[in-house]
Length: 322
Ligand code: C5P
Image 1 (cartoon, protein in one colour):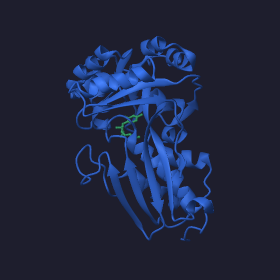
Image 2 (image 1 turned 180 degrees about the horizontal axis):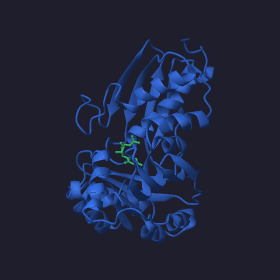
Image 3 (image 1 turned 45 degrees about the horizontal axis):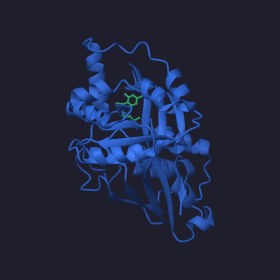
């Protein structure tokens, strides 16, 4: 196995550190089909990248090491604490890219987290996407965006979208993407309620509710057309009416306080409120930036959320910074 070439874009690798950042996402439509034999569900989802970013900084080293700062930094245990070893997607991204390039995985990896962990915002996926971009520059592996997207899909269903950003329709496991044009900016308030929820647990709860007949069986998925049409250029109310998430009922079943959090977000003046991905983050759609900021201030004082943020989208996917 050879070592990484001394390259990458020299300007970026010159001071020994390369940083990349990647955004959180909200699923404005999340249609979940039946459970497949491989343990995944067929998805039809519309992703929107929003302005909450994690940054991954990488430096030359021997072997791999990982440090985490910010949201979820802790002892690496527990549902909302970010793992500090091979279980972390950033670590896996480094091993995967090194294997792809035929080099040894040598780097210090540092994650600055703003995106809460296990919150339904694809924070771990953002970290993995940022790591791929940063390490490609540090190691000079010269992977194409297509190569990185293929590696991203092996790391997790949401990682290709974290790389791409913007707005996209995701099918299959969610990793097959078609970009969608959005001609306007959308403002949101994100309320992070309590501890993280496990994504597999929320999908399993959905399967149980379907098996018990509490929910339709997922054989027919709702069309993504209304949400895509609204996102392109519609008024806020059109997108509000089109938002949907099949994982919301199981997330509420596992975390009943989410009902109160959704109600509080609507009552404060959001056009609509829905659970983001597998939760427990609540995303409230606001008319404009001023409204999102006002909603964030009001909800921060309401006692239902641990953290509240005003964000907007679409924003870019993983890219180098600095
Ligand atoms: O792809 P990723 O590793 O992020 O998925 C985490 C878990 O979420 C999977 O192990 C599976 O339980 C669930 N999942 C699913 N169907 C999908 C995506 C994720 O059941 N399309």
